[in-house]
Amino acid sequence: MKFDVLKSRKKQTIASAIMLFMISTMLLDSCVHDPFLDGDTLNGGEPTTPGCTNGGQVCFESSILPIFISSCARSGCHDATTREEGYVLDSYNNIVRKGISPGNASGSKLYKVLFETGEDQMPPDAPLSQAQKDSIKLWINQGAKNTVDCACYCDASLFAYNTAIKPILENACVGCHKTGSLGGNINLVGYANVKVQVNNGNLMGSIKHATGFVPMPQGSKLPDCDITKIQNWVDAGAPNN
Image (cartoon, rainbow, N blue to C red; front, top):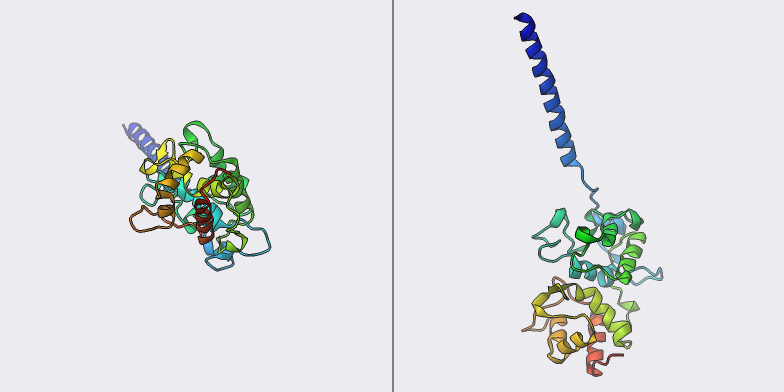
C-alpha cells in the first residue's frame, strides 16, 4: 500500500511538472513580438526629418504614407479600429512601430509581406505596383525616416497625366477606388474612369477637401503642390497625355 501511494505521488509530481512547463511555454510565446520602435529615434530625436535636402531621400509624407493609407489602413484591415494582426498603418509612428527594420528592407516584415501570394497576399484585393514596392524598399533602406515638407522637389508646371497625375492617384487614391475596393462606388483605375470624376467635379472637390465633398485621401490631404498639379491638368482639359 505504501509503495502504491509513493507511486501515485510520483505520477502526480511528473504531471504537475509537465503542466508547469506547458504553462510557462505558453506564457513565453505570448510575450514574443516584433521589437517596437520609437519614431523619434529614427529622426535624430526629432519627430520629423526635413525632406528638402540634397540626399535624394524618398519623401515619407508625400510618397510613402499615401500608399499605406490608401492600400492598408482601411476598414477591415489595418485601420485603428480593425488592427488586423495588431498592425495599425495610418501614421508614421504606427507604421514604423513594428515590422520595419530601418536600413534593411529585406528583413522588414511589412516589406516582405508585399510579395506574398494567395491568401497571404497584401493588400488582399490587389498587389502594390512594382514602383510602389520599390519606393517602400528605398525608404526603409534609407533609414525609414519621417521625411516631410518635400515640396522643393515638386514642379507644379509639370502635369502630364501619365508622368505626373497618374502616379499621384495610384499612390494616394487607387487603393480605395479599384475593382474589389470601390469606395463610394468610384473607380480611379485608368484614364477613362478618372475623367468621369473630373467631369462631375468629384475629383477636385474631394482632394481639396471642399465643403459638400468627401475629403480624400481619408485621414490626410495631398501636398499643396500635388493638388496644384492636378488642378493645372484639369484646367488644361484633363488630357490623356
